Every structure is written in structure tokens, then in C-alpha cells.
Image (cartoon, rainbow, N blue to C red; front, top):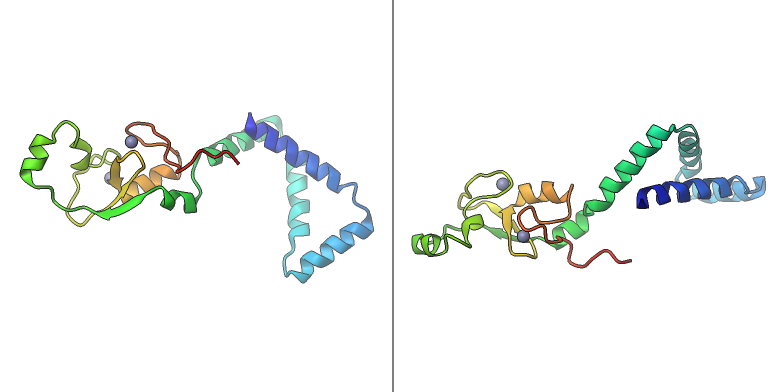
Length: 158
Ligand SMILES: [Zn+2]
Ligand SMILES: [Zn+2]
């Protein structure tokens, strides 16, 4: 639903842009050109795109926006991961800790056993994975693959 609202908002904003006088556009364009950016042309192209979109295309756009909003931005992603290097666990530990420590032996994402020296990424919920595996996962989902706990340090409330 938030996606549709975003599309509507974008459409509204683009419509408002058409209310701009030629003079205002010129000022806007000049300031953009001065910044060395040609946003105005990109903007026009984008407006044409949205105007010509079919219902299906809008739906696809909404879906894409939805996907984006559940994924974590790169900065947040690394913030909520504790990085460490995997070190072999003593045998006694592995046996006494069989119940709770299982996910410290192999990665639940790729199902591979950890190898000493592997780069590990640990989430807030203390579940650990290969750094590359959890990184890839978090770029699509913002929750822990094992316990579904939110991976972000704080809920996105802003
Ligand atoms: Zn893995
Ligand atoms: Zn977890």
C-alpha cells in the first residue's frame, strides 16, 4: 500500500511541476546546470515514463518499491552485522552445546560448515552466518533467516 502512495505522491509532484512558469523552470534549470547536473532532462524523461505507464507497469513499479523498502540500505546493513572471523570451537563445547550451538557450526543460509578463518556476520539476535551469505540475504530481507527477528538496529519509524 505504501508503494501505491509513493507512486501517487510522485505523480502529484510531477503534476505540480507543470504549474511552474517558464521563468521558474529556467531558474531551476540554470541552477541545476550550474551544479553540473542535468536533472531537468532526466526529470522530463521520468515524467514521460510514468505518464505512459500501464496499470501493470505501475503495479510492477509498486512491487519493486515494496521490495526495496523491505531491504536494508548498505550503511544500515553493515551497522547491524557484527563481523568476526570463525575460529574452531573446542570439541567439548560442540557436544555440550549441541542444542543451542548448532548454528555456530554451519551456516543456515548456504548449509556449509564453517571453516576456520571464514568471515562471519552476526545479527542482533546472535545468529551468525557467513558474512557474504547474510549480506546477500539482508539485501533482500531485513530479518534473521532463523528466528525472523528484525535485523535493523531500530524500527524504521522516521
Ligand atoms: Zn553461508
Ligand atoms: Zn536470529
